[in-house]
Length: 174
Image 1 (cartoon, helix red, strand yellow):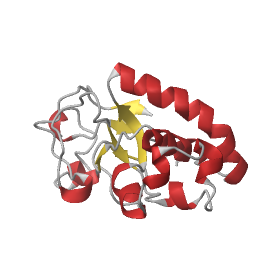
Image 2: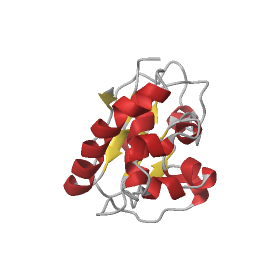
Image 3: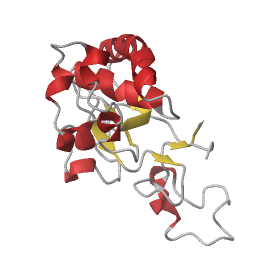
């Protein structure tokens, strides 16, 4: 990944589509992490094939997440933005849950699914954006809108596209 512009905690003036059509907060605050929406929707939950309790235990709040909420609040990917204590908690559970997620889903993206499981377990629904990143031109839900009014000739000209129109990161591993 490559940063295209500074990332802060305040998205009051950030132009993007917010998943679910609304923002719960304009700022990253304790209890409301932000992230880029990734295209796996509720797949992080369905990929576990009914074995979520094997990953999180029998009393985890993650077991109460509906498929709708799984798609609206948890298919998160970089950039991840959270308070230090929220991110510490997510990271602690992410690493704890990943081996068991991988036991059930030994595929590419298992680590991202484990992140979603950790967030759901901690009851930390994310404010998901479609415009934090560009990666897959065919994927949808990414921040390619900055190219709408740019010609091929001018797209790489320094300062031709105002920084405030750029996504936060370029994910170039596709």
